[in-house]
Image 1 (tube, rainbow, N blue to C red):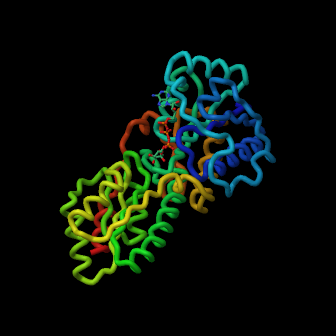
Image 2: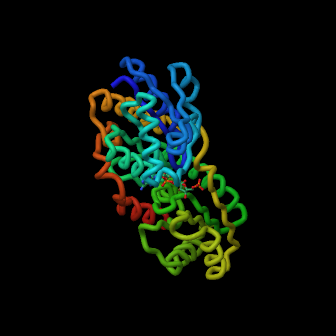
Image 3: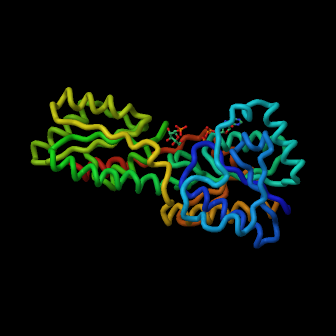
Length: 319
Ligand code: ADP
Ligand code: F6P
């Protein structure tokens, strides 16, 4: 294989640029060429191809976002869109495609694989909700951003003796909320994977106050309930002076952490190795500090479980 394509798709995530850089540099090192596809699957259909050289990926390892831009493409969900994409790939002489994205993007890669395109997926989403990998590109950065927000909120919450609700991202998953909540010492962590009643939440808050806590902090994943709704309930039930912060897309941007840069670099290089060995229809994940190759069919649509012991620990430590 001499010509590899790469695209970023779905929600962007810090570290995607490090993955693009790794793919280009490793491929060139091995004597192959890389073509970037702009705007994800939308660009694959409209033919937005851009050759990537060693220098075109210089000075991006530390940047959030994606130099290739990303998109959601309803057109690519249809057979006609996919057929156009396949024609364009063939016209460009692209023999293998690396897709950096989440579960939806991997479904797109599977559709291409069914049509005979060699595709490799790299998990790129802040949500960390991809099976077969301990971490996704962007997750660690998003968690650190959320922890910084918690630390800041804690200062003002303590000064005013207020209760705070911090809503973090996670459409269907509580990985960011759990990791940030544990690291930030939140009193309660509300995630879609664990059923929690507002009675329990408020009892914990009142217990903490009775023991002399001067602030209360609840981290809620957007997939559990809207932060405003949780804040309203806390105010109504406890009477505490309550404020709500919605962190939103602040979590999606910013310079990637060393961990995200490193896993993105490892995954990108491994994806090139696999394509050059004519292996495909795999996702490259990480486990125990090393890359792992997992069939895309074993990843797509599979729900990754949150670690219950970690959830329990967070509750235990914040009594
Ligand atoms: P993410 O990759 O972050 O989960 P999305 O779910 O929005 O993001 O998916 C990104 C894109 O992947 C979609 O806009 C669409 O183009 C493509 N895609 C998603 N699901 C499918 C599918 N079942 N078949 C083909 N393409 C899909
Ligand atoms: O999937 C990543 C994610 O950041 C989710 O956590 C969030 O719900 C969603 O994307 C937001 O998507 P958009 O940028 O389209 O609003």
